[in-house]
Image (tube, rainbow, N blue to C red):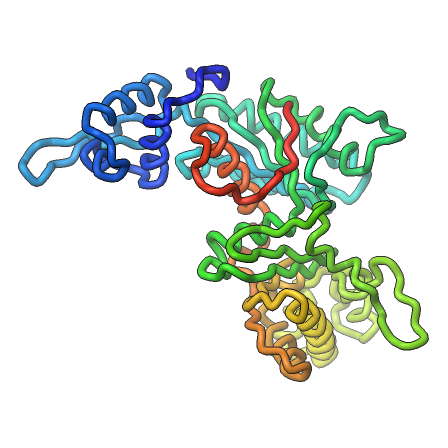
Length: 396
């Protein structure tokens, strides 16, 4: 099986492989037309790609003149990538081949606890998947989505007394996963990952400028402008939980007070105190009670929708995104949309608002998309502009 230590591909082979990956299945005449190279040059490139098992012959097709043409597709030597959503209550994993086929998808519930314990649990899960998928070729990269600010570069070398929390978490996770030597691990903010997924395969796939607003246990914003993810100078772009709140004469804002007010824990606490029956333990239970006609639940949903709408108005005033996609355990509920729209109209805003199409899978899909893009870029070089500039990458 080819290894990452092999010499880089020739430029002609990279051009041919890029077309094979893009098209999925393609004949040599089609490749010759697509890449603008001679028939012998394409043949030489295909031979090199077959030797490395980057492409494989997957069938034949009858040409216009009655000649059979070999059909090529991505081969097992391309390998696969792994996306990980490391949440506060779950660890989700998605293994996907660089040909785009899902190999394994798992969701694991975890208890809220120390970051070190969550990292150890996630490492066990990843290690089991890695060992079980060895037959699918080399693991090319792993992307981990976490609910933290991710700086442009992570340094895993500082001692515990000087390391930042995200550096300790990354070091613990990389150690626990026990990946093959040299496998790159990308760390990215979970909301940014969700925004990438919605941009490419979700509610914003036809929109170059939009914002993904997560409303759940925590709140956050993923910003896509001109089709590119905006992360900010320090990786803190979109941290709306840092907005001053409340902001009124004689009131002193507190750090992350907005998140404590809009987060699902506070919403459920208000719903229970308002007399929703039975007392909801999850946001889904609250929305189900509202849909069933519980007046107290309906009032809480309406009030919360207004609060979310005012946050959307603030986002729209700064970014003018054209579209805001709501996600997260609370934000994904369509029952919020009427109240959000009413709050926007009251404030003179006309920004379109919709809910996620990917639901709870948005972050995981974004992590898989990011790691696949990175892996292909590493093999092909200049394949296309990367989804994320200056990704935070460490090596196992």
